[in-house]
Image (cartoon, rainbow, N blue to C red; front, side, top):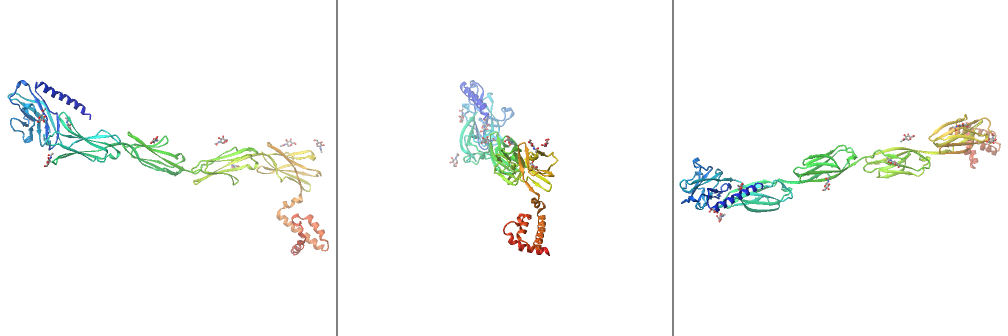
Length: 587
Ligand SMILES: *[C@@H]1O[C@H](CO)[C@@H](O)[C@H](O)[C@H]1NC(C)=O
Ligand SMILES: *[C@@H]1O[C@H](CO)[C@@H](O)[C@H](O)[C@H]1NC(C)=O
Ligand SMILES: *[C@@H]1O[C@H](CO)[C@@H](O)[C@H](O)[C@H]1NC(C)=O
Ligand SMILES: *[C@@H]1O[C@H](CO)[C@@H](O)[C@H](O)[C@H]1NC(C)=O
Ligand SMILES: *[C@@H]1O[C@H](CO)[C@@H](O)[C@H](O)[C@H]1NC(C)=O
Ligand SMILES: *[C@@H]1O[C@H](CO)[C@@H](O)[C@H](O)[C@H]1NC(C)=O
Ligand SMILES: *[C@@H]1O[C@H](CO)[C@@H](O)[C@H](O)[C@H]1NC(C)=O
Ligand SMILES: *[C@@H]1O[C@H](CO)[C@@H](O)[C@H](O)[C@H]1NC(C)=O
């Protein structure tokens, strides 16, 4: 208690004065009594008092009287007590009694049945006879109370032992207060201790309740009750505990999952005294901060960047608490990224890497012309190794990434450069008076095609009049050489193709135009021609019935397409078939 120190000093000084007065054995006019004294309404107060006067006066008898509120008789102060007579002010009638022996310089006064109107100053006046009357300026202030005083330490913090003290005036020798606490039974490690304290003649019964405060005690009401045995007097003071405590997080959203684009609300509530500062943070980034008991963090339109750990921190002067949750954001794969060199030379190794991001992890596939070349399940990256590319690896590749939230695909063109290939359809066809040579070459980059005629010692390229380039299909180019006029018997033609990656040449085979005719006229034409042929055969067979079959069949065999009349089964079928067909024909 801050007040106790100066009071203690005052006590020391007054005790010293008391000793001095006793020692000097009455050198001066002087008196000692408590400056302040307290008592409960209805009870009594014994005011200790001692006085002194110059010894040389040697009075025969010593009388005294007590005044209320004023030290001077001329002001007609109410007489509280008078030793010469029993005439006192009506307020004090039957209420006052001198406890001390005036001859022994003891002026202690008892006032009973205290009531609030008796509050005030009490002065003692010594009456030694004649003019030797003296009112001491030292006096007592009587305080009449109707409740004890509970003293609470300025701060009560959870976990730190405290003592609440109930101060009960105890200055009535006839009635001793009985002090009890109420509501303290549930306090942790509680213990009640009663002691008597005296300050400057003012006796106080101090009942202390020690305990270990906890947050559960916050708001708890404690009462200190004063009772007197065999009376109905009861006085009480109450206090409500204000226990300070560090924050505890009492509500927290569980870890949650969200789909990209949706909104989520994260909530955190803390119990603290004083109110905590609540903070929502993701890593080092503070997202929301507010003092209070509950704080919500609203995340609108979540993206993968929102994925992570969120921590709610509650802090006050007594401590801090935190709790974390995880937010998982699911999203469809991002557009896959393909990393590969776009151009490769045949034989070189090529790695096509496809990567994306998604949650959950995607299924990645690499496709070429709808054919799956590689697949990776629940991985964000897929690599396809082509140890040595060929012209067949050239083309468009697709990387497809998929999970339950969606699908994305990216195309990639791989260009393979390769040496010329002379395709099988390259050949020469002889017509009536022309030779047409076709050279189909596949190459990347485009090849320079030359027809070489070794028998004529010539080499003809596209700048030659006889050479024409026709169709292109992808990397294939068809070049046609047309020769007119008389043809040398040993003529042969070479097709040579060259590009940056190599050169090829091939001798072109000769085909006769008739053997190709069927292919050229097409199936309908073939049927028509076949029908005409049958008609001719019918005609011949009818006009030369008697002629040998061998002759006609040999004729047919040379002139007809080999498919129709080849094989040994033909002659047996021939007659019936030709008959039927002929009968139809003759119709
Ligand atoms: C004065 O008298 C009272 C009552 O008899 C006694 O209790 C007290 O001790 C006395 N004081 C002194 C200083 O002797
Ligand atoms: C006397 O004690 C009462 C409580 O018992 C207290 O309220 C009062 O302040 C005290 N007086 C002095 C002068 O200490
Ligand atoms: C209270 O009253 C009872 C009976 O009347 C008596 O025996 C007892 O001594 C009293 N107690 C006090 C403290 O006066
Ligand atoms: C949360 O509390 C733990 C100890 O309880 C502490 O180690 C950690 O640093 C705290 N985190 C934050 C973000 O305050
Ligand atoms: C692409 O691949 C090359 C070679 O493997 C590498 O250096 C580069 O970092 C890759 N780029 C990306 C975006 O992955
Ligand atoms: C790949 O090539 C094809 C044909 O040349 C073209 O249509 C397509 O757009 C190309 N794709 C890419 C991704 O370059
Ligand atoms: C073709 O050229 C060679 C030498 O390059 C020569 O020996 C030959 O006689 C020539 N032939 C013709 C038909 O010109
Ligand atoms: C075509 O041949 C002529 C002469 O033989 C030559 O001068 C020319 O460069 C050749 N052109 C190409 C594209 O090879």
